[in-house]
Length: 396
Image (cartoon, rainbow, N blue to C red; front, side):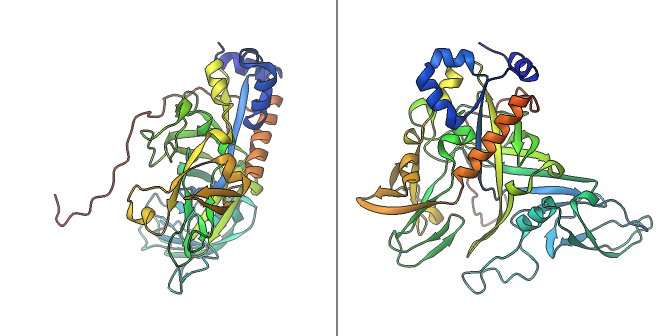
């Protein structure tokens, strides 16, 4: 048995043994579970992919004369200004002003909130245009200026839902091509797509949220951040396989970190043809090896993780709950899966290679003593369903 204090002392002394979730599998095979549990202090997990429920709070500072911003745009992307005078929130999926969206289907969605966030973290200048009705103490009614991330007082990424524990494999049984947040789906089950780092993914290595909880330290695009809440749509009460590994979406995390400490290569704006814009993020989370069972769960393999195959032409939009089957991440990563007796080509919208890079960078930071672990202040819910929105004809 180890404690967080034990592990942090070893990290500070430069003596911690840290492996990625990719490396730990072979290590345990060679050393055995009991011996490895004594030797290994931390396993780093990671994922890289589109995280639509992401965004950032920005503080612009006051101009002369002062202004209470009521409407504002960054590079023509609307930001929410229903806050204090010069605070605003930029959402990753917000479209650029006058984007035709899907008026001419499928729309290109060339630029939006995720792209503005990418530009800011890359050190590029963006244009702020702001309006106000004016008050006695905030008389300015309009401004237009250019700014960079360095010009902002604060730029804090605050993401309501990241790191889905597991997720769907999408296909299309209809006769027409579909454009979805999981990419382009060809007719008659011409292809499948998915988005997960599988055996590297944080919550698949901690299926019962024993070490990842509210207050846990995370590596968010290179910045030290933390879990500030359960993620929206956190739904741990679901079908689970051996060792509690969920075979559907299950848990999510709400994450926050300082954008000024982030690395450009791990924050990328995404355009999804026919669907919209998003933000791809690299996220790594350390798992302290407190005991044998925690370590055992980090040895999960892609072959042991199952994901549901969903028809996005009917079952997904109509919420039927029907699946076309279950497939393993080992099969998904092979590039071909079998569904209903047919061999289907499959591709990933997430990057295992980038996720592994995130896990390795966090491993190296911990090994150098630059990243200490933090014990959760509160555990994530382990029993919780997901409510649907009921359409009512009159007010209750």
